[in-house]
Image (cartoon, rainbow, N blue to C red; front, side, top):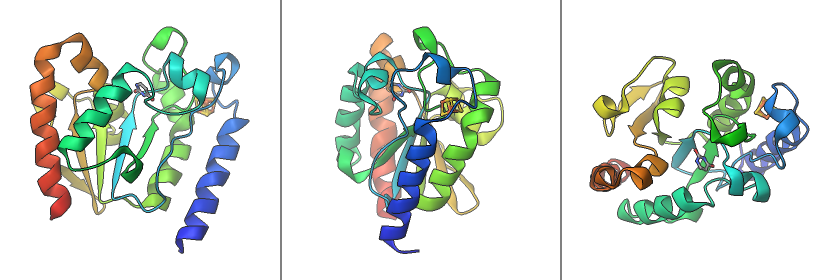
Length: 188
Ligand code: SF4
Ligand code: URA
């Protein structure tokens, strides 16, 4: 598929998301946050769900966690415009609670389509919720962070969520180290 075709199909996903009411989050969101980035990104990042600022702007990771994420990406030799960033749910869970399994399941087809279209080399799963939904298994981020796991030709790398590192600064060096490892994985 050409880059133009992928761009167009990703746009269609965003348009479907914009009017989606497949789960209850559709009732309470302000804007949908479908995700953004290059259609041929080698790295895709998947977070948990939009927060307040994301819900207001329609863009992923624009709040405090997003600022930290941008700094971390530089450690991996990447700039934010190089990566595709999205979430397991495209609408904000009220009060920033974690998405329920039903909400994540309802939204999953959009994520699956995005992954299939972009076909990234590496997918980083930010936080336990994203890792659990995408890997379809209960996980402990404390145990599996930074450990690559290959499945269907894509390398999945679970990481601590940047918001967790804001609440618990001792996690920041761990994230930095994981990001530096990601840099060498991307060069392979
Ligand atoms: Fe639709 Fe996903 Fe929003 Fe639920 S969270 S309404 S499934 S786009
Ligand atoms: N946290 C997330 O998981 N996703 C966002 O888009 C913003 C903050």
